[in-house]
Amino acid sequence: MTTLNPIAIIGTGIAGLSAAQALHAAGHSVQLFDKSRGSGGRMASKRSDAGALDLGAQYFTARDRRFVEVVQQWQARGWVAEWSPSLYNFNNGQLSASPDEQVRWVGSPRMSAITRAMLGALPVSFSCRITEVFRGEQHWHLQDAEGNSHGPFSHVIVATPAPQATALLSSVPKLAGAAASVTMDPTWAIALAFDAPLQSNVEGCFVKDSPLDWLARNRSKPGRDTHLDTWVLHATSQWTKQHLDLPKEDVIGHLLGAFAELIGCAVPAPAFSLAHRWLYARPASAHQWGVLADADLGIYACGDWCLSGRVEGAWLSGQEAARRLLEHQQ
Image 1: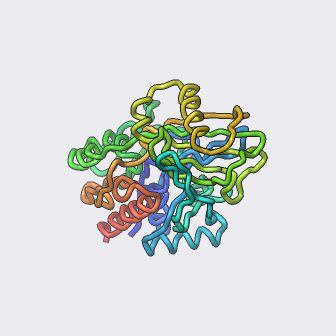
Image 2 (image 1 turned 60 degrees about the vertical axis):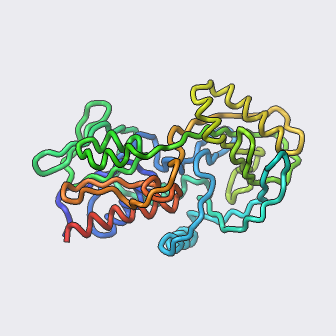
Image 3 (image 1 turned 30 degrees about the vertical axis):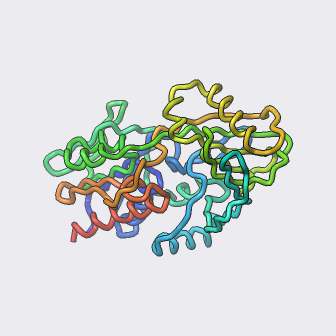
């Protein structure tokens, strides 16, 4: 049975689009909303003078059988490619080759390619920040930051980071309380580009005992622009919390210094640099909800924070939201 009014989905990251695809496939009409100018959430890529840069999710893995199958379909369609970086660990002041051999996937030719393809021709309103979700006698309505109202909708799926979901779920205190209990950690990300390639074999590195947590040679990923030697660095959540409001130039200076200390080769002044602060980069701990739901009222919340905090968790959570909604209609 299809609903006469569309289903509103707030957020066009992996979770929201996973739910949207499943509902659309089941014959339902959906309407997506996102505060950003494009889809992807933390899987977005930033266009820059140094080409497209993956500033958020760096790669993802697939362990659950259902997600493994969908990633294989994405690969067959050319949306993703396997990334096999020359991987290192930096520990106790030493760089060493990492024994980690798990399969890593990236969007191709940039991380945002996945959500762009998932979105396809589904109806979406970008640059539209939904601030309120409320229920009338029979239907749901949304209000945006400009004061415009949207609706009526038969159901609402909130697919944003937990702190943003808390406010949108305020009409259902039980769900809002669960979302409010989730702590999400911030991450400063910076990108650096060098005219000449750095004399280093490192293409990805897990970092300990440093302001940095991770670094990747962006151009080592399949399909990336290679005219500059581009790197993406993520700070630890602890360092980020201590420097949350630091001006971007200072963040770049600090993290460039940390990078130069560990990379094991000369690091000239970058030809290009930028910084981006992810306030809600990842949940501080995993949860096992799958989805938050009040099926009788017709409101759901999904996201990586409902599960593992990984891309796979986001996709599975979106699938679960769609499944619960469809199940309740039968």
